[in-house]
View 1 (cartoon, rainbow, N blue to C red):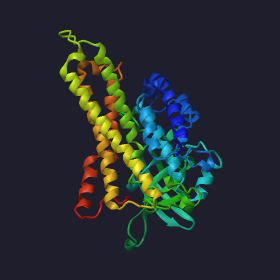
View 2: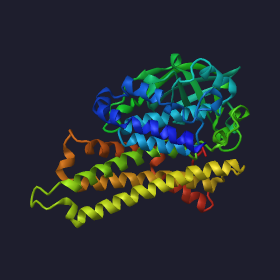
View 3: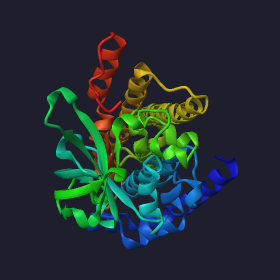
View 4: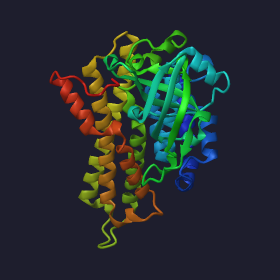
Amino acid sequence: MTDQAFAAMVERADALLPRLRDRAARTEELRRLPPETERDLHDAGLFRILQPKRVGGAELDYVALVDCAKILGRADASVAWNLANLASHHWMLGMFDKRAQDLVWDKDVDALIASSFIFPAGRARKVEGGYRLRGSWPFSSGVASCEWNMLASVVSTEDEADGIEYRIFLVHKNDYRILDTWNAAGLRGTGSNDVEVREAFVAEALSVAVGDLAGGPTPGCAVNPNALYALPVFSLFPYVLSGVALGNAQACLDDYVDIARHRASIYNRTKLADMQSTQIKIAEASAKIDAARLIMRSNCIEAMADVRRGDIPDMAAKTRLRRDGAYSVNLCTEAVSLLFSASGARGLFTTGVLQRQFRDAHAINSHIAFNFDAAGTNYGRVALGLPSENLTL
């Protein structure tokens, strides 16, 4: 990744913020991204930040996902969520067999791909030439805009001695139907609806085993040799979306500081900026946000450096990545909650952005990747010499 290419992408993302802020209310009303927002993201090249250069993508380092999501999250967390989520699927497709990549990108390099990585939601069985897949998957963000979907499934076999296999299947939109289920308190504009596959054949080349995504050479490395496509996918899973929480929290802090500089208490006319409690809350919230940023970015940068050296993280390192990903987003949520509480009744009005930032922060934090109890328990197990309970690492 060149500094110049990265700086140009950041500049284009930053230029979108006024428009995204103006559309935020409409995005919530639509419960999906407005068409003009999708077009803006396409025109800026943001969906393709991790796509291989061989098909015209930017092929930036993994940390760009955090940084670009952070920028857009300052305007609208729903937009940032869909951008980061859908951009990450170009990265993952770069790890599939070349035949899968060609099927998608030879037709349309801008084709969007949704996902649902909830393995128990699907059942697949091996057949000649591929798999038969069925299931019903929740939380497929941005699915209405997508031509394809990456759906996770357990592979069933007749011999229990074969053990459990987790695989991801690339499925065309003609083989699933979208269920309009996304009526949520937060991240309302992400269109994270359910999808259902009643019975579909998925060719072998359109599927990849989770074990092939655990770090090191992937099927796609034959044509995409960049270390980006040899990263451990599910160890880094939290960082696909953690930048959304970071940008949302930073926007909340910036708005709070701006208001505190100019407003007086309605009860005693004391300037908020002169109140020690205001000063302390700004310090605490900003410390949480800064710490979260350092954790997210340093882990992504370190992961790329390790793979470039040929170092594959062991289970202790993988559970640490998951622990830190959850913890850093929890810090962002704590910062937003602190500022929301400090804002008093002003934050309750639906005409203001604070209530949306608060709702979005908690919606982000509800993702399983940011559940610290789950991530922390698994980290502790491995630290104590017990096997990992996360079968995707």
